[in-house]
Amino acid sequence: MERINLFRYKKPILKLSSFLTLTFALLLPVFAMRFTLEFYKRSVINSIYNNHVRIAEKYRISRSVSLPSVLSTIDAINNQLVQTSKRLQTQIDHLESHIKAFNERMEPLGNILRTLQRNDSNWIVLKEFIYDDSVKVSLYELYDPGVIKTADRLEKVLINLGYKVTRSNEYDAQMTFLGKRISGVSMEGRR
Image (cartoon, rainbow, N blue to C red):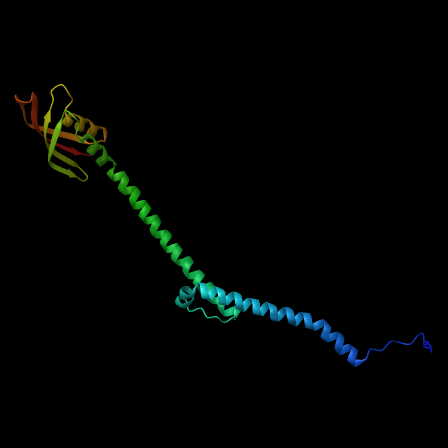
């Protein structure tokens, strides 16, 4: 026999068992996703902890997944690193300015030392070399009379660097067996 609905305008009523079944069917994927994400989060944290055990022990990071405590720990470490970075940058800037000032102060010394380098014909022996706010050089030189003396070149360099040069020749004598001359020179440059 066929069922005929004689009550066309009757409101459909949902049974309690049908309601509970539908609610369970709707909530089941939500709980499954939550548990899956929780498991994935724990496994990722464990793998990170296992890969970086030293760091985790040093900063006392636990394996707990209490996100607020982990975030506060990370923020504290980050702030500490920022402060250390600022302090180190200040030290770097200080050292950089010190090195620049030192380099500017030592640039004349480099010019003087390049002048005193030995060339093939002239030989020098430094008796005294003082470099501070003023320059004092005493040297002995064995030189060829046809070539410019190192003492003369040094005097020009000191004058070019802005020093007022006082020069005294202690002696200048001929060496007959080498065909060269030997001289003793003292120079003092003041700014």
